[in-house]
Length: 366
Image (cartoon, rainbow, N blue to C red; front, side, top):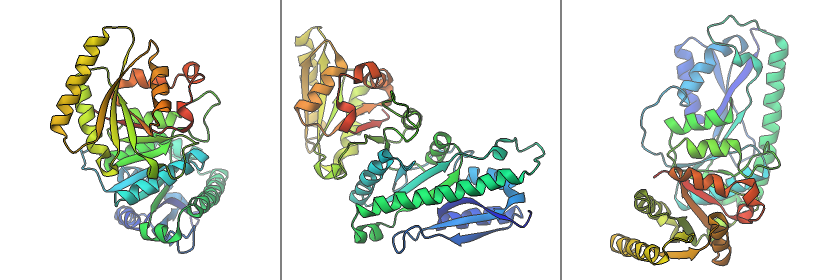
């Protein structure tokens, strides 16, 4: 059994070389194996293979390299991260993410975490008794994941011109672990320009409107996250013209608008600052909104934006109706408005709304 090799992770070649040097510095034998999911379409991924007996020692090294231990502040790197679980949600997210990466002249990285086998849950300090059945399960999981990934890539590339795909040279990472923890850890050490992911995943429950992994990424990272519903059109970016931000006249809303305007500047879209008056002093709200419009006009003379006021006792329904009536392409929220985010995605409210069927949600830190 000691002579049997297993895959530690599938990584871009540059990262695989780094991992190999780290492993070899710890006297762990390994080699890099080419992998070609799509002939002439994706040649930037390789497998890092190690002996079974070295698995317990090797996994902490992999986790550290991908960000689970290092916690330094890092400048954002020029890539778009697209976590995938092979669902239709993540397929739409990958298509949108590819277009965004292309527009920003950035790289796209597809990231998938496969649930870890039981032997990896044993504390590293304990003695591990190797069970051949566990490693057989590991091998079967690896093969099943590769098959799913190949099918996913076939769907993805069939919707993208082959020349565009080859020119973009997307990268991918496939590893064992828990998706939520792994994505956050990777972002911490390799912060992307943006995370684009499905608003739900294949394991979402019937009543869920947002997946637990997506919610965890949104609320635990300072990187902008674009959550893509399943029914978002695959050419969404071509028609991305307006984004609406709901304001409540809090002091941080000016900071949020500042960051939002800068964030969407490369896409040349219009930003609408929306306030919902729920029966309070409408004249005061109008005056505050006009003051915000003047301040933003002075600071951003180049930006296309507007400030709008609507009257409704029901905030979520008012936002949804405004999105429908005005052809809004995305809803922008900040992480400090957790209460608003929770209310918008409450199942009892969503049954009366159609927002969640097609409108992407852009969440950013402010």
